[in-house]
Image (cartoon, rainbow, N blue to C red):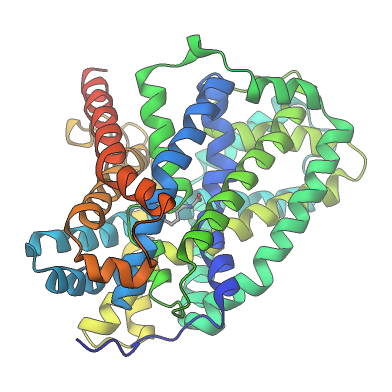
Length: 457
Ligand code: PHE
């Protein structure tokens, strides 16, 4: 089978690491992780999340990068070639299909939240939050949600930004994300951390995030922690597989994956340590849900010296993080259309971008006019909540589980050894054990219990 690359390639291993970290670090780290930690009681949830990242996330990420690096094509076609090479059932190719679909579904609601952040860049920069009280901040947030025009406008802007990067292609577009945006993000994050340490209730935040109180932990929170481990590492839907396909062959896959996992986790924890000190300093509740980031921080920015600049900078950071993730959500679909349907990059971006934009509009309307549209076939949830639930808590864990099973049990051993080297080292044995036994058992238990609860409640 010919392995000549159809797509461009990352210039070097570090660009791949930065691009994959760009995919991993996003709204999941800065918006979702803090608010679900707040809602699920803090420390014990953080511990379960960390265990899921280490025990499931990292091993599955290695499996996913490996499949991409092996196939050198979009997830659908990389899976096709892995299936052919391993002489197993074609049904395994559905991992690729489900991934393309999950990526598009995530982007529909992801872009709406990224739109909130864009709106907040503008609001903060013009001084809306100067001297704002908690009630003001709440009103501003709720007014934004109540306005279909505002939500749709910023969702549209964000989709255009995403399409812009995708149109420019892998090395110019995605490579730019890696080279320019990721380092800026790291620096701004550090400034924010210093700011929160000096002006907020830092020690209270540390004890909230790291004191393990297991009484707050329910089976539902365990499913959320597991789903989030997949979401935050961009696993189970082919994003990392698609990026892996653009990698040079130089081995060292294990180290590469550990670096990405480490950076992603670090940024989520740092985001929590930026947000919670300010939440506590305001006497606000950590469990205020999706609005946490948008309702508590602006009050602090409005009250603190330099808040205008830091506040604006902070939301710019959130947009950058979301931008570099959004690109990877749609790249598997774009790559597939280019390879198989002979689309140009431009056509592929246009078709998928418009489809995602349209469903994204419905997600934006879920916060206002379509708020009560919660049919039973959406599990009684509105469109926005359904897409979030179906992807992070079902499709990504299932996708990840199937990838683990495929690489653990089915992928031809010579292919495996060719990508990762000697399979007899202790690290590789542990990795295969995690793929073959730990992930299937853990993901299955959590899925069954979680679904049972979801259907009952
Ligand atoms: N990992 C991204 C985040 O944390 C979201 C994402 C999920 C991106 C799946 C790509 C694939 O925000």
